[in-house]
Length: 197
Image (cartoon, rainbow, N blue to C red; front, side):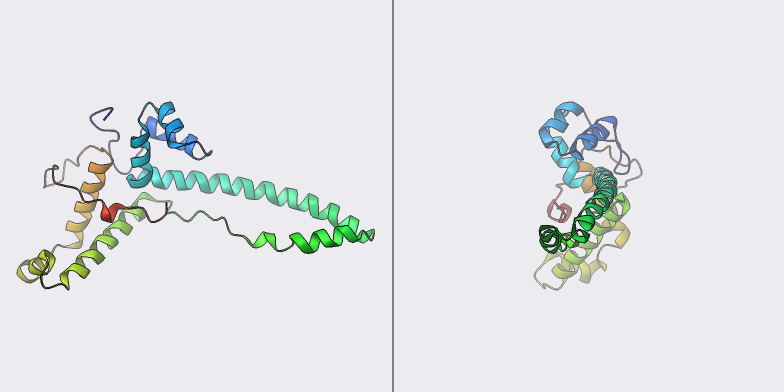
């Protein structure tokens, strides 16, 4: 680990994280982004997969870049269509064939599918954790079932604190000073997996 903590919270970014995002959004590899940010490839990979604000900002930057490209494509499409239209009006059969070949290509979707807000990413993981606990609570031999019977199970707020604690641990964020449970537990990553990657 390069520093005691690579990030201070789950909802803000360090300068190193911003440098990595700026490179990743242009198509750079984790290794290249890590070198520029002064971090290891593993750290950048961990941020990309688990740090909510890093993921959200990367998605926002990708969306901005995609929007810029879409605007450029609209201008180029207009110019190409004007040219192709004139050729078709002039009776060029190749222009008509070209139009018939390419006219369906504009239907492809390249939309960014990830969340653009770190709170949405955290909430999604809370919902995933709650669903897993519900599934486990149906198994009469599970600890979750016994916990549900004896104690009513954890509250949604408890689950959110646990998810955030796990995210802080896996992304090397500083512990929340208001967290009543000290860090140091084993942090399961199964609920923290990114379905978008």
